[in-house]
Image (cartoon, rainbow, N blue to C red; front, top):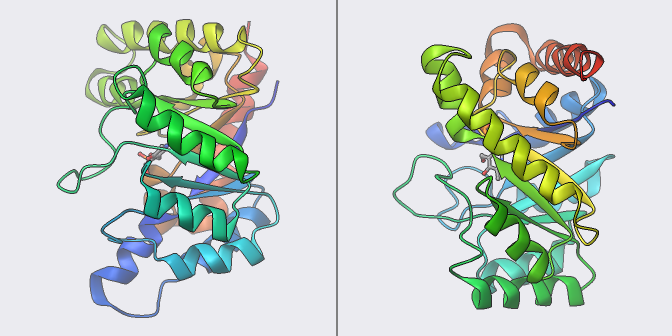
Length: 252
Ligand code: PXP
């Protein structure tokens, strides 16, 4: 089965915001990603607006041809914005101002009523909702319980272990956690889609896809934009897609 690549272009906006210039524009980057074969575009509108701005999401709503996925915190301000802009998918993520990037998944088990309220408002407004969660059976089941129709499994611990020591030791254990959680999610009828992401590189996507065939799509940002800075966005996207296709062809 082929695995979809959803390109996260946040860090093109990070570069722009570093100088307060109008360039580089994440909207242009998104177009290049789609021309090179990305299945969709993901952006995270953070509460502190450190990279993506509201107008970026509004423009992307008009330009993205595939699926536009808006990552955001489960706050009423962000729910209002999503309901106004109407992305194809909303992914609720945890957010702490002092963090470098999203650390850990949303604690759906511990914050059931807060997450349920946000999910219900979005779903009532006609927007499908995914929850970005740690790869654990409890979080997967709680996601379905609060009304989400998809989950995105946090791959950060696997990706970090892989960067530190390849596939030896810790990375294998993290891969098993993700594979187990993905199987549980795939068996829950209410969850129509199982995605994964965070910290993945062209090297670490292969083993993940091979052990977790239920994962249908990956959200990839930092490594993709890093590759693009050196080889160009279109080549970076094509090489990621080639890595996904090679891994999918070796799935057991
Ligand atoms: N998925 C979610 C929910 C995220 O918050 C992020 C980072 O914004 C990613 C995927 C992509 O992670 P990375 O930039 O490390 O590829």
